[in-house]
Image (cartoon, rainbow, N blue to C red):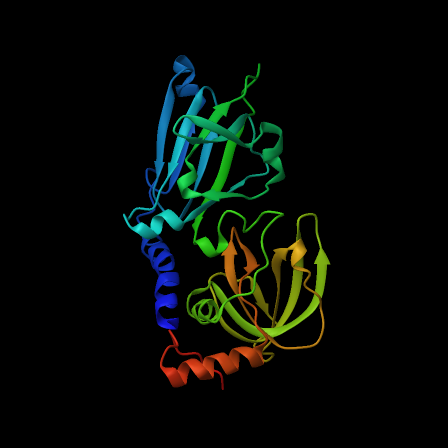
Amino acid sequence: MLTAMLASLLLPLLLLCRISFCQYSSDQCSWKGSGLTHEGHARDVEQVYLRCSQGSLEWLYPTGAIIVNLRPNTVSPAAARLSVCIKPSAESGGTNVYLDRRGKLRLLLRDQDQARGKVQCFGIQEGALFIEAVTHTDISRRITAFQYELVSDRLGPEAHSVGAPCQPCSDAEMLLAVCTNDFVARGSITKVELEEEHSSVTVELKRLYRQKTQVFVSGGVRVRRWTGHIKMPLQCGVRSGEGEFLFTGTVRFGEAWMGCAPRYKDFLRLYGEAQQQGTNPCHVDTA
C-alpha cells in the first residue's frame, strides 16, 4: 500500500522534472511585448503561450488585452494536478489580471495591488490569465511584469495563501519529500518571526543534504553549520524550542517554503522501517 501511495505522489513531481528541462526561449518560457505595437488594434486580444515549469512575462505600455496560457510542455494526466503561482514585480501595474475559464472572468489581481509583489496561486485547470490594460492618459511609465512557476499539488493553490492548511505529512509523503524536495536539511529552530501573512522560521543546520538554490548560507569552510529562513503560513503556529528536525520543502521565487518537517528521531524510525520493508524510494545517509 505504501508503494502505491508513493507512486501516486511521484507522478506530478516527475512531470515537473521533465518540464524543467525545456528549451528556455522567448516563445516558450518567457514573453516580452509592447502595447505600442498593439495600440492601433486596442480591441484585439493576443494569445500568449508559455510552456515551461518557470519563466516570466513583461508587457510594456499595455493597451487592450492579452490572454496568457500557462501549460507544461508534456501531455500527462498528472498535469491536471499542477498549480500555477505568479509573483508580480515591484514595478508592475497598468492592468487588471483575471482568471479566464471558458469566457467567465474572476479577478485575481487589481492594478493597484500588483506592486505589493504578493504571490498568487491557482489550479492549472482554473483557466488562463486574461490581462486587461487599465485606461490611463499616460502609458509611458506603465509595465506589467511577473514571474511564474508550476508547482505540484502538495504546494497547490493554497500554498502561499493566508488560509493554507497545516496538515502533517503522511509516512509516504515524508519519505518522498526527502528524495524529491528542493531542500533537505537536519537542524533546529532558533527563532520564529511573525510577518504580515506568514511566519519566518530561522533555522541552524548541522547537515545539509540538498538545496536547489543557495537559500542556506554556510558559516565557513571549517564550520560545518548553515543558517537560513524558511517560510510557513501563520496559522501553523510554529514555535522555537529544543529538538532536532528534518526540514524539507520547496524553493519558490528564491524563498524556502516548509514542506514536511518531522522530528529527526521520528524520521529515523520511519526510514528504518521502510528499509526493512524495501519501500524507501531513495537512500539517505543517516550516519
